[in-house]
Length: 168
Image (cartoon, rainbow, N blue to C red; front, side):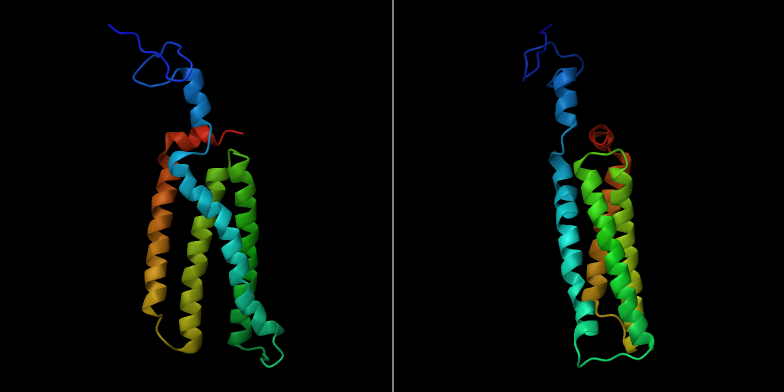
């Protein structure tokens, strides 16, 4: 029977792995592999939210557009407050994700669910406010976000790698 040795340090390997326990623990504690996809999402999401905040803020700042206390005012206020809350949540998630805190998976899941819920409420509110049905692009975008969220929530809940990476 051939003795297996670690590909990195030439130590004996037990079980059916390529690496010894020490090397495997080192490689599993890094954000790599499939975790690059949520890592990119965690980096880009605060930027995307910050940019999307410009649209409702421009409605308040522009002098030619005035509000009265109507449903439009509450709609814009909802968008600004919701976007600011999502921005704060995404910034905190960014921090705990890259410091590999134990609660990072929980905050990533919360961020996905909050973003999806915000999009649903926003689409319903805008279509109700303007008295028109939601556009097909909004429904498709919402469906894509839902599938993305479902896949990554499942991964973060079930993956052993996630449990080994986020341990601080």
